[in-house]
Image (cartoon, one colour):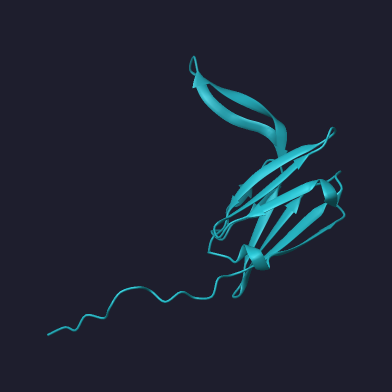
Length: 127
């Protein structure tokens, strides 16, 4: 997938299970994992964070989602297809209020942002 970044330069994201590995004997090696890493987009709006992932060829019952305040994990393990992705979220969210929809191979997870926590500390007066 190719997108244009905010700086105007193209960003290339690979779909699949081949990751660059350690360098051996001066040559880069690759490691092939059994599970694929789905393409993911993160949309950060005022009140929520949307995570959209392409996970074709599975049923919604096969998708396991796990969320924390700062991380979303997508895990699919079927005999034919395996997907796994840990997504670090840009802001704290409330995973208990999350909603998700899976349709036509696209998973959309909506996570409401945590209500603004007041910064801790005391004001300091300047003399």
